[in-house]
Image 1 (tube, helix red, strand yellow):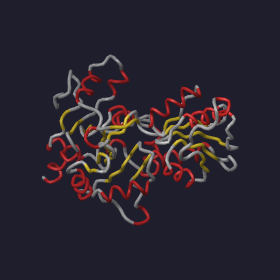
Image 2 (image 1 turned 180 degrees about the horizontal axis):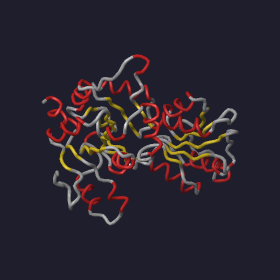
Image 3 (image 1 turned 90 degrees about the horizontal axis):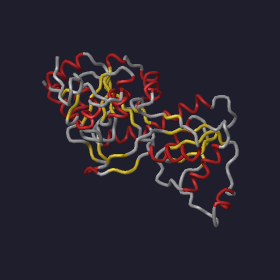
Image 4 (image 1 turned 30 degrees about the vertical axis):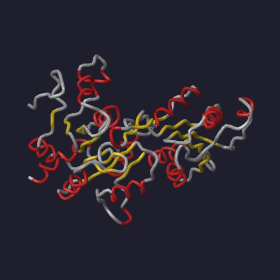
Length: 321
């Protein structure tokens, strides 16, 4: 049995050596990758990551990409994968490998708003998120800047609202403002209006160890103001895995989840019965793993990967040998 390397007697979280990787990959058909912090940081590919994915494809492995980032459409992520050297299928099925929270939020609303005449959503998010919703027939309002107008709260509450809004959707929104928060709360005063968050990530990693506030910060603001709990689409929610499973068709026992966050990527994998690999190129560290292993909290003890690598480039020796 492999010896634990992060802490305690927990046999999980061992370094994925070339020998262990070869044994793991022999029992795996599909690898699901997070993107930000795993394949790239910002606009820069993680060194060796494109070569690792190219080698996985050459070995006949099926790849999928599950991202909590709602600021890009499926098409945009497919283009970025190609631009940074990760390849992928061409033609009509080019986008089928990508499962982002913008796309999966659209699937969720299509299910929940079935039968509603002319469904409409108030979107605190990007044009990409709105585009995915509109592609399934959900009209969108609210995208873009919306500064405060008027002399005070009375005027803010008198600002006109769109009729027939059936959902408030919170994604990554660089134009998030107090006026948007106020409008969201007003829409949500209707009990039938859904509150949906694309994900609860608190940070988005960038190059050189930098980060910015993530969508979870915005979702929490709306939840607190509206005194409502959002339906969350992205990792570690089971819904995004169900989207992959239903559209992509995977066997959990022969699938690996590769990610950089214990509380999203690894927890999703553990909850859905997948094998898990933590890469240390993003948010979570081995110190975080050790803390979870030694925690008295059962939910934290679940957030421990089977294996870890410094980078997914560490898979290359197993693939080349």
